[in-house]
Length: 246
Image 1 (tube, helix red, strand yellow):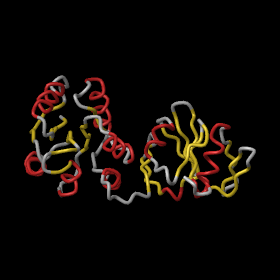
Image 2 (tube, rainbow, N blue to C red; image 1 turned 135 degrees about the horizontal axis):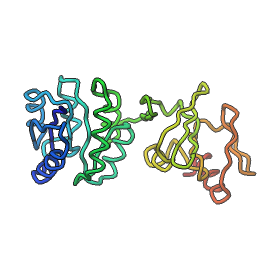
Image 3 (cartoon, rainbow, N blue to C red; image 1 turned 90 degrees about the vertical axis):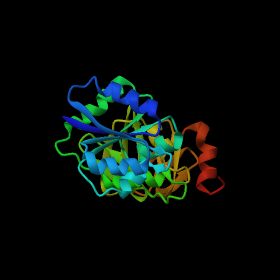
């Protein structure tokens, strides 16, 4: 059985979530809470396998609960209303999330990922990273990139460029590494900071610090020797960006 704890500050959302979970015979809800304080007490008392956790709570955030609890060994799926900063933070940490109110199919997919884990552990680095993205004061210099078999926390300084491949994205990293991710390039354009990365073409997102030369014919030369085409409509913008006039 998947012992599940629901922490959300909206009672109707908690009830709706429990109703949807009841459709899954291997899931049992062991408690509900609506605040950071209640969540910490319930985590200790119920020892869940899975926590469905709201980002914004009346007395803090879901990140506060994860930071303050000493308990380990549970999976986390964030619950959120559509919120640009919250979604961006969770995607940056390559963490699971569900939009409220819950969609049954999306919940089933999330539960499938939980079931697939042999031993649930909290991804400390990913959560800390997401918290930094969520905080306006957070200093962020890395991103979590999820491949099928692993999550890599990658400093911006190691990223050369990202290339679109339909619904996939290839990240080319220093030392010749490449990661292939099952999300479109647009998702990473929204996450990675504009001051470091620029979309130069429908198929390419480039780390500004990795550019060694720009040919006005429309080619970016990177420090590793790669040559990246710049779309005609973007050439003037790219030139201004590279010389610091943006």
